[in-house]
Length: 358
Image (cartoon, rainbow, N blue to C red; front, top):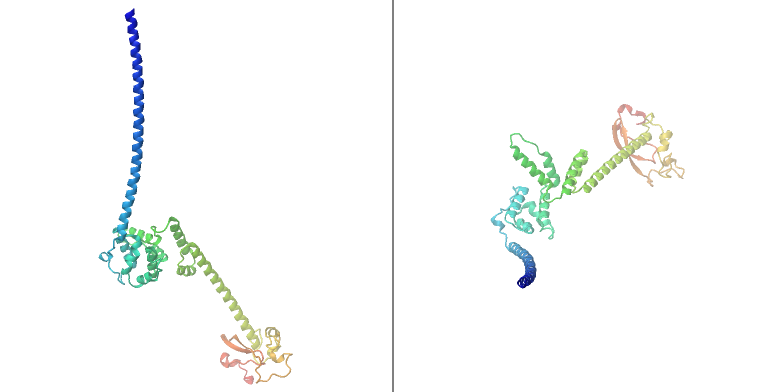
């Protein structure tokens, strides 16, 4: 029994030792895990920092490379030929752009690079630009093409004039049409909204009457607002011309009727020596220059104190009138202070001349 008790006590002590060992091992494991976690966190932070430093280093290297490229002189004379008057300006500029892109020339230097190779109107366009705008290649190109007559309107016209040609490769013709469309809409420079505006302007312009379309097209509007303003201005001008023509025609007819009445040529009156003051209609149309009252001439004015002398010119007012005699329209000089109107025999038929009063 005593041996059994000692065995049990030894077993219990062994169990306690095992528990303590397990506890110490568990604590040691936790400490190792915590240390490993801290080490991992340190490594992650260091990796992140290294990544940022690497990114900054790459940016610095890229900037240094750009600076070296910018500082490096462009030897364009080894690749480009001077433009000649026979060269197509669009093709020449396109060849320059492709060469500049292939050689990675900075775009801000394109205008200064191509300038020495320009001639004629293209060279004038370069010198006409302001110093601030001359370094912008897009502005220079637009100015050069405008001087050459290559405007967006012309590009659109070329697009509409394209037609399929039999006997020519279909694929080549498709590429030609794509090229014409790109030169008109310029997707590399214009936004989607601008391309839509160009298409709408083109459709609107082609829907206008031919007279207005020609006049508006010469104005070369750059946006819808300018296009509408040109159309409205042309319509207003046409209406003004119509109104002026109508008024002028009416005034000419009225003057003609007045002169005919004064000469006894209208309203069924007989030609001859009939006193012009006897017609009631004529009395309403004539006006005295002396008292400015209608119905009589100056010699019959109540303001006259004595007969008008031929040598006294006074304030005689001379007026040119349009008259029509035997289908001929001519200008007559009307004197409202005279009792007789003279007319050249060349304006009437000889048979109509009263020989007794010639």
